[in-house]
Length: 129
Image (tube, rainbow, N blue to C red; front, side):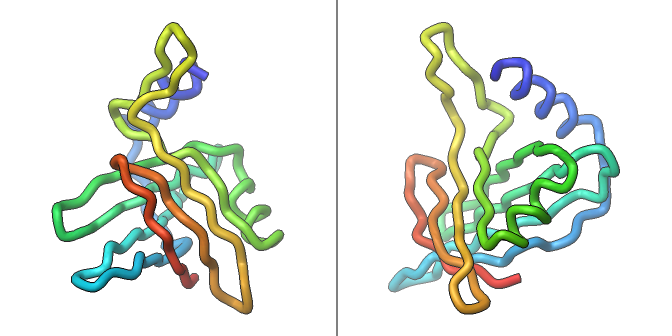
């Protein structure tokens, strides 16, 4: 797991690919809703996702590196699930993965719903393609 996190961090810092929007998500709130935009880079060797979380207190960027075709296959099957890594993601000697979140949605009548756990928060989200 440590090697995967390090490899993803190196890739994140060393590549600049065009992005395509995968999903646009929002979390309901009484004030300004949090939004989460999921994009995929045009890398030909891996699926590199970027998750931009914007809320009233600021914004955060998360990422995930998956085997090529994983995102398309998951969406075709009606879901998308992945870890949400940050530049500070690390696995400690006791096995705990720190500064990391989780993104998971499933399809329901043409839209997606689920949650993103990140920044110490759990965002219930609704998404569209």
